[in-house]
Structure formats: C-alpha cells, structure tokens
Length: 180
Image 1 (cartoon, rainbow, N blue to C red):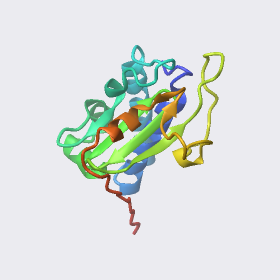
Image 2 (image 1 turned 45 degrees about the vertical axis):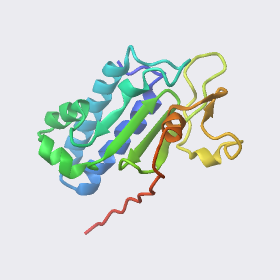
Image 3 (image 1 turned 120 degrees about the vertical axis):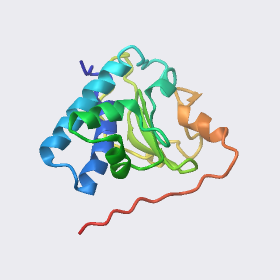
C-alpha cells in the first residue's frame, strides 16, 4: 500500500524511530524489522487520503507523529506488534518528540522548544510525478537557504509557520548516545 509518492518520506520517518529502538538495545533485529515494516504499513494506510504533494502543508497536523504525555497511537500499534507496552515505548523513545511527515520533507523536534531538524528533503518533480529520491539534507545546504529559509514553491513551509508563531526562543537540544 506504500505509494511511490510517499515512500521516501515514510521510510525516513520509520528509520528515525527505529534507530531509537536499536540504540537502546532492548529489541532484537527481527523485532526491529517487524516494527519497521508494521509502522511503514500503518503510516501508508493512515496517510493514503491525506497526502497532497501539490500542497505539502495541507494535512501536516494529521500526519504529525507526536510523543509527549501521550504516546502516538500509530507508534503504539507498531510497538504492540512486537510485544512492547506503552511504558516500554516511553523508555525507548524521546519523552518529547514531534515528527512531521510531509511531502518532500520529514523533520523532527525533540523537546517543546527544541530546534527543528530536517531528516529528509527533496524537490517536487516538474511533471507532478513522484519526486526523485534524495539524500537527507539540511536546509542550510540548499541554494538560497540563507536568503529565504523555509520557502517551498514561493510559500513558507509548515515548520517555518510554527517557528514564526513561537513566543519563546528556540533551545538547542543535542542527542548523545552511550554504548557499553
């Protein structure tokens, strides 16, 4: 059910969440693969009628994966598939995470006032078909990014709208992993 137009974005989002499970080391390779495939299928089904490549911000809130005082129900479904409880998911995933899965961009924020980081970014194809796969990039690496950051086809991006509405300054959070 994963369509070509949303495959790279969903793959990036699922890979990002799966890395947290792998880093903590409480999930074996088979469970990780099952979780990833299950979450990919769940997201593809969930986003099927809420994916608008011609208007990437439309439906952005619907496609947002949110973990805070409540675990995102889509992540819970995938976690339960491999035997993880909500409490276990809270231990394995960041306690404050917002993950936006939008056409041509996947980004995240850890913490309520954390910086927004881009996991995946691509450009729409001129013919309106699926965008070519592109490597993850940062907004700063894009041509003209310093002049008009966040503009997508002459419009401000969903994440920039959020930042413009921010009342407190952004705090930078860095993620550190410790291996034993």
